[in-house]
Length: 453
Ligand SMILES: [Zn+2]
Image (cartoon, rainbow, N blue to C red; front, side):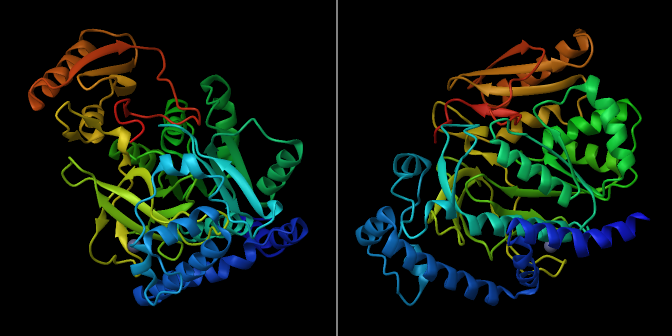
């Protein structure tokens, strides 16, 4: 049987039958989600208004935290303009969620209809959230929309590189193994990217002919580097989807070239699932049918904005105007792809991926990371601001550390001194490996000073 027939049969029979058996409703949501891509801005806005009214009503009647907040700020759940009502609420900070997550759980849903999850805590204290099962199913259905944007057909095999959580019950493990078979997904654990064992496995996976690769930026980049090192080619791959970490231009170029594929950057988080995605014209579209997204200027910065998001489908724990700690900005205009959903920049990272001077000036993390663009002397690096004045620069040299490496680092240090009038002292440390966050993410820039902002 050729691959095309196999894909078609899989999409037509195997996937629907399996999800019917599992009582999983994701497929029923897919068609409605796809249709939203042809909506006008007015249609999307009317949909947002309807969802806000629905959430306000549930929150006012069934949510201890939000019913009190509505009273405090004079929000009328049946007000004629739901956007104006939403604007009455102050921004919801992570600290408030940490302190109140129990009261933020709506009481109308039984326990089996909700899922408790914890954000990574990769850059601060973790956040606990409740998701409704329906919200999770919607997100699962969103993955079909994502694949359609990437030009993939349902039923095509894919490779995923992400953290494979070890803390799972047997039932959960079995279910996941089954879903992987249904979706024809091969998974590489981003925690265990061991070059010695991966080489043979990569050659095998490549021979299986995956149509696309999904994963963390640095994890997929590691796969790309290993593939180049061992002459493993990926002729079947047509698209790569990256997420969870800011995508640097150098990594995008590496992925495009190694896989001979277009790269689609996606943005979401553990708390708020699908926020935006890049289309085939390179614009980041906000999934405005799933979220109301606002951009709030970061004090002390020039042009940086906090992402403030209201997810529209999670009635288990509404989060109105949630400042998620990321920075990005709105982009004006329309995209040539024809989708009318509003545009934003790619997520520029978390607030704590930027640095701050003693006198309160914010310095974009990309300024520091930029030094290493297209630099082949180092395999990896991390700038870590440990106090207002001190930055540790951790580097993993490619090959043996020598005068070239030293000269390069001295140029970086001098440039940073000049650009910021000595506000930062950079101390270099040569290491074997850069420590990753709990969820296996690599951070190029991290400020301990801004960690819990
Ligand atoms: Zn577009």
